[in-house]
Length: 364
Image (cartoon, rainbow, N blue to C red; front, side, top):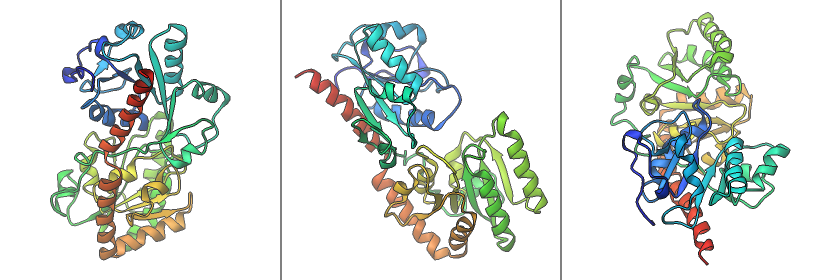
C-alpha cells in the first residue's frame, strides 16, 4: 500500500490527491453492477486508496463529489497515475475522455459481465482499455481482446447461515412451522419470476409443509407482470403460501429463512443470487445462464436445468423438497463451496493485484 487510504465515514468528500483508484457508478437505480461495487469497494479499501463517484451509492462508501472530478487531471500523490475501473459503457467513455481528451493521468480497466456479442460501439470502447476483466469463462469467450477471468466473490460474513434451523423464518416475521423456497431478484420476465410461480403452483398443493417467498422489485414497466403473477397465485388458492415481500434492505436475513433457492432466469450477465444462497447454506436449483454453471461446477450444492424448462425445474425442486438428507448434504456442500472458492476477499485481492501490476510496469 502506497499511502493513506481514504476514510469512508459519513461519506465526506475525499482528498483527490490521495485517490489511487476510482470505481465509477453512473446508474442511479440498483443493479447487479451497483451491488458489486457496494460490496467490493470497502473490501478493496482495506489495502488501497479507492473511491467511488456517481449516484445511487450509500454514503458509507468512500466517494468523490462531482466538483472534485477536475482534480483527477492532476497526478496522484503516491502513484504515477490513477486507475479508472469501469463496468458499463458510459463509464468506459468517461474514462477515455478524461485520459485521451483532457490528458488525465489514468489507466483504464473494464470489467465485462455480458454474455453476448458486443456492439461495434462497445468493441470500440473495450479496445481502448488498458486491462479487461471477464467475470466468467462464458463472458471471456465473447471478448475479442486479451482478458483475465475474475469471478465475483461473496461477503461470507454478511451472507451466512442462521444460528439454528428454526431461527431464520422467525427473524423476518414469516409463519413458523413451514419450510420456504425462495426466488430473489427483480420481478420481470427476463428473471423468470413467472417460471418460479408456475413451479410453485405445481409443487405446493401436494407439500403443505412448504411455502414460497418472492423478494424483489417490480419497476413500473413490469408492474402489470407482477400483478398477473399475484392473480395467478390467488386463482390457484395459494395466496397465503406464496409471499410477495417486495424489495428488502435486509436481504441476507431473508436468505436465512430459506431451505431451497431457485434461480429461474432466462438471461443473466453473472448472477449473484445463487452464490448468496450458497453462502447461506441453501441448496440451489438454477437455469444454465450467466455464471450459474461455473458457480455450481463440482460443488454438490444444487442442480442446473435448461432455460425455460419448467418440467425440469419442478422435478429438480421436488427432489430437494422431498428428501431432507439430500437437502442437508447439498446445504453443507453449498456453504463449503462458497467459502472455499468465492470469498469476497479473493476477488478484491485479485483486482488490486491487477492495478498493482499496471503501476509496477509503469515504474520499470
